[in-house]
Image 1 (cartoon, helix red, strand yellow):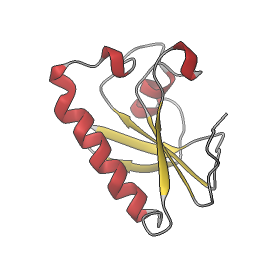
Image 2: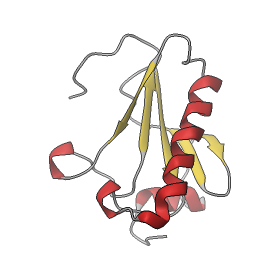
Image 3: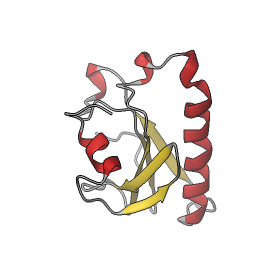
Length: 115
């Protein structure tokens, strides 16, 4: 856990969130500034800054992150109509939180560009 990380604080319960899913390794919650009717963030509990900071030891965790995101998308009713995953890395991605997180976006027809 990183002391100055917003997502680490949410995972620890120090900040409120609308939790969608939690297990020993993964925490998912609704985005506070949704870009679609359904906008959920799926976050590993282990603090990893971004995909470029991930290592071989994170392989199973990142695979689990994707599979849990699939389960969450199904549970939210997005599987039939479709949805988008977004995983931002690096300065040009305009990310604001430096902790790996996968966005699940759905619930309407999505535009090609997110920003």
